[in-house]
Image (cartoon, one colour):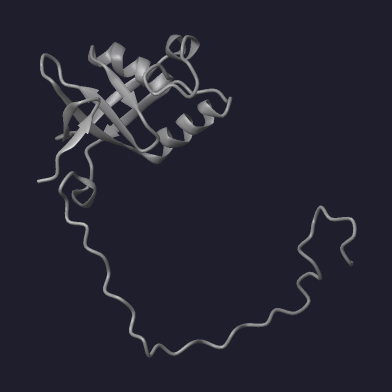
Length: 145
């Protein structure tokens, strides 16, 4: 089995989904681009009473009274909020889910790939589009019209 470490501590995958509530107070004192003091990290620390590290696709919560981290997955709505907040936007208050990872994304999971395409593949004839536009240079004043 694959061993994953975060800050010198072992890490395990989450066994269940949890919900985290973000409030206005969490957004007020949070820091941008700081994975231990962002809005989601503050809400996780407040609700779960433990340390938290937040990345764009994963969230790590420290297990109470143990030297161990639990790894959760981030859904698309939370990912969008994290990116928007780091870029200077506002984090919308609400309830967000941290879910357990899919079997292929878990530590030591099966990472099989698709079989390669056959080499004697027949290519389709390219489609020629006419009358669509003369140029894709929208901002270029020197482009022909």
